[in-house]
Length: 105
Image 1 (cartoon, rainbow, N blue to C red):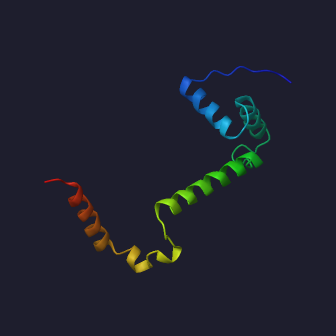
Image 2 (tube, rainbow, N blue to C red; image 1 turned 90 degrees about the horizontal axis):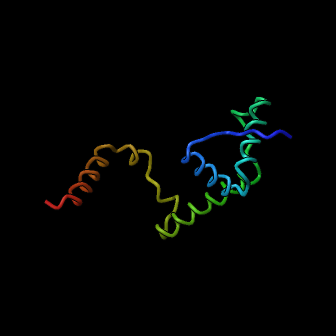
Image 3 (cartoon, rainbow, N blue to C red; image 1 turned 120 degrees about the vertical axis):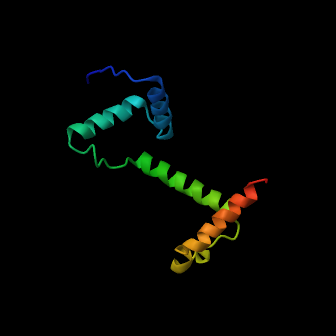
């Protein structure tokens, strides 16, 4: 196996370390996987690793739990109908009411 040296700016380095930690891997492993995908033609449609799939599943579950915690009693049945969703006059009126409520004048 060969070693290579890559230079990146500090912010890229920091973000790559964070991303690698989230995936429970190293920056070297991320670069190695990227280069392998690049050289086999899979770089644009690389399959997600099992760790990435699990990370995404955890993130999705966290978002769902946040929604449930911040909106008790939320139900998909409470969604707007198509007509209500596209009622632009009502949306504008609600937006204006929100702006008016925030403006202390």
